[in-house]
Image (cartoon, rainbow, N blue to C red; front, top):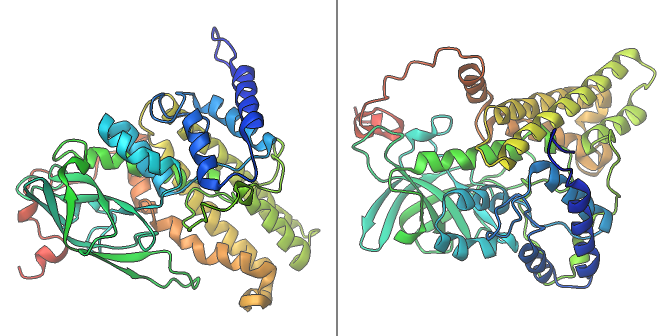
Length: 425
């Protein structure tokens, strides 16, 4: 567990965490109270710094905390955009006052959303046109966001808006925390082909943001957003695929219900155990395929290899975060691995299901789980930065290839023909 010359603290971390979980777990405790108690101890988000609901542990040590929690059979901490994206960003860039105001809600289960993408600014996120103009002690925000997960149930949104159109596009952005329940915000659900409506369009019309909700300096929004995006790619990486407690899950939970509602029934998997994805594939193979077919067996082995490779890539990304640095290109590798894995899973599952893959609803194989993988596979290729963007990052930052030409690098944003700005020119 330790590097050469360093003490092995793993046993002590596991023992201390396990002791705390054993002494403090009460399955009948209200979920909100359990999350509050766990957050105050620092064991809910152990890699966060001390003083911000964390213990400053490394990634390796934090995994031992997870092992201790699972072995103790207690409910996990909350997970979602608030905890995986907003929280780490506020920890890294927020002032002590902002951390004191926002982190208590984050660690106790608040739902937040991410107001980044726009109809004219998806892959070119820095080309966004939502603007924020200062009005005394507030900012007035006007614009439109899209593909906003959970906006319909979120208390806060992390928002990037343009505060200065007279400078190049990356330099004129600022980062805010905006309250979603206000007259200037309209949320319209987007119906997906899965039948769900997790995503939304968000229209901001003279929406208000207090000036002290600006995270980072004025015009430094792009730098702050990079922290959020790196954590998002880690959250969507293949290392977490198949987890029943996915960090990307967005749903309302009864915080007054007993905490035992979130306890997983399964024990901690042993090293090398199959993930949820591999288990589904194996079940489909046994019911609809031919487990003796060498081609089918080879496809299953290939997916198992992809899952393991992705898992190790995910660990590399989390280790970079734990060392106190910003996640590097490894998160792009993990994101691409997730995309490739899901596409391979989709094709293999549907081929094995054969004609049963055309069924829907209660008649679909395994209650529609195979369809869920297939129809959701496109999301990973787009959300958190498209596959093409990830390949550019890897090519430029890992392989040292020349950067793509950027004619807009030194041009004021107001002079660019992007999005709706080019409509009347």
